[in-house]
Image (cartoon, rainbow, N blue to C red; front, side):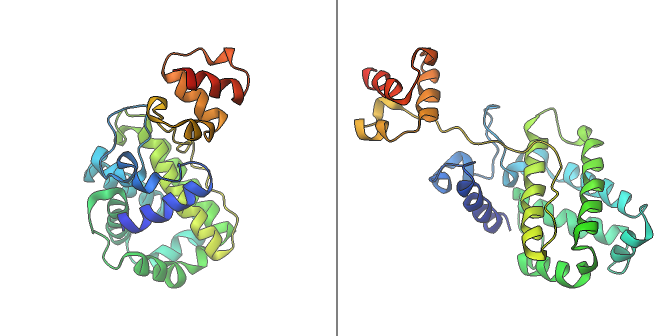
Amino acid sequence: MSERIQEAYIKSAVAKGLLPPEAHRMPEVVSLTAPSDLSKPIHFWQLYSILGQEPIVGIVSRFYERVFADEPWFLSVFEQVGGLKHHIVTQASMWIDVMGGGPYYHGGEYRLSFHHTHNAMALMNDKGAERWVTLMRQTLDASADLMTEDVRVRKSINTFLAFFMTKYADEFAFADRHIFGETNGPLKRRINLMKMTTEAIEGLSAADLSDALAERGVDVSQYPDKKALVEKALML
């Protein structure tokens, strides 16, 4: 599922301005290996390269332990499908698959869709979604020990969960309450002004110009508007 979900997320993120239009051609974005540069975000299909299998299974296990200790109205839907071990195995397989660990979740998106429209339909509503999110957020808050010291990991997991929650909210018409914590912010493009034409530089946004000049050590506070930023960029 890594490739399919990656394509869907990139399309959505480009539309929201979180990724540049050429993101699907950027190695640092489409790679299944997380960038070593800590200033670059970890995309959720790169999480397996950082975490490996055991921490992912550990987070999923802790979540379902909370589920199976929860209120009957919520728990009963899961119990109808299978026991604690069944849910840990299937959900962890899906996470590992989407997070770049290989084709673990047999059946892919079709199986996932079938599960939600048949097995879990009773929870695909405002009340069920709110409870699911609450238990997952509690799990993540209590699982820092499984996420390494890389602060990008939690943001990436939050982004992964928020993407799917928004997807399900649209599909099943419930309120989108993906309050898992801070998610990946907009990706800053690395712009090489020295290799760009005048027309290309003029086509950049003021924010991109400011970032590119700042990376070259320019005090951008001296250039109050886009025209001034363009003039400075052309002088380099």
